[in-house]
Length: 271
Length: 151
Ligand SMILES: Cc1cc2nc3c(=O)[nH]c(=O)nc-3n(C[C@H](O)[C@H](O)[C@H](O)COP(=O)(O)OP(=O)(O)OC[C@H]3O[C@@H](n4cnc5c(N)ncnc54)[C@H](O)[C@@H]3O)c2cc1C
Image (cartoon, rainbow over all chains, first blue to last red; front, side, top):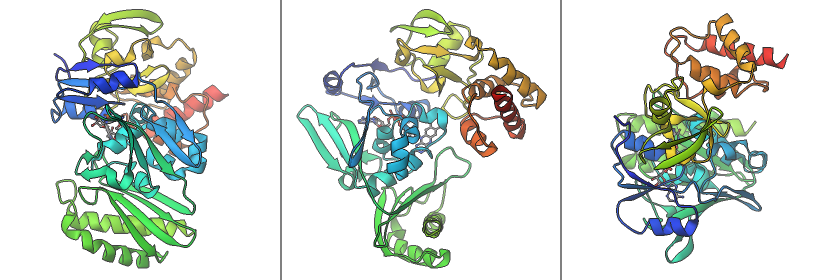
């Protein structure tokens, strides 16, 4: 007996071949394949054909005035990279929070963001750092900005016949923070990323609060915990009817978590 | 699909199903049993193997993905430092039922040479579960092994 439901597997060896494989039918792209396999084990996903892009190259981490992470770069590679740790610490910290070292050795940064699941660890950094997705399809390359990339729950803006070749993250100045909260499950309930620029203006991004990621400008925020908590909780009240309410966590609890974790990060950054 | 790779120092070939996992190939076709299938959905980390030196969960690897790669299970580690790791697990009682032990020994092996605090050891061992020890004895064993190998 086999563990996984049966599917066909294509392993193209260059980008062009990969794009042409996407042209027809019920095709699922896999990079690290960790989520594709997890969903297949659970029979939530029943792919007919899996197109693995592992052999098409795209393994580079490029650092300039921005960070570019290509489609086959693993979370471990980014979390370990000295330049990323020093110059893009929010990206490195987010990557090192995903799952565990074994999963991170296979799972990719791009797959994590393209997932667009409510618990995606890398998405707050992608939003906060004015990320862009570089995409290639039959009609050539294009770029999609982070704020246009998430179009629905579990849905991102690349078309089924397009491949995300890399993600970019803009270099940011100022203070940063990242944290998450998880209970018994392997998956985080909520992820929080915060940036405070040199003028003291705060931006925060969440995954796991509503069905889609959130990016909010908070303006100037108090750095004591109680003050921070009160302000964040007030601001989040506007979202309260959209907050996820499910088996893993009630809406009220998610709002509380988001406020507590944000206030803690703001307090910690002040030191 | 016909696949060639290196397994524990030998060049091997297999004709596998496209959706066959490396865990199944190693256990069922090559009868190497240190990688265990317990949760078989990427959580328990008992199926860990090294692919080109990196520890991965073999239930999250499709066998065709390892074409031309080097796969090593605990059985294939010839480095004598592995004995030190084993001894440390015995001395510090780093196991009870033993089901997760090959996975923890292999993972400890990948950490040898590094200087890690207990907190860092815990962080590094994430992703492999033990239902008996409560982990303290495992962290003790790893700590001991790292120190002994450094000495
Ligand atoms: C035990 C376990 C724990 C986990 N914990 C976490 C966690 O803490 N946080 C978290 O965010 N996730 C977690 N995950 C989910 C998942 O493993 C990660 O999100 C991972 O980063 C996905 O990357 P991947 O390369 O394996 O993606 P894949 O499984 O290869 O792909 C994921 C999705 O993205 C699409 N895709 C991938 N690459 C491309 C591309 N280049 N172009 C277009 N589409 C693409 C795929 O079609 C698929 O829909 C966990 C999974 C497991 C098994």
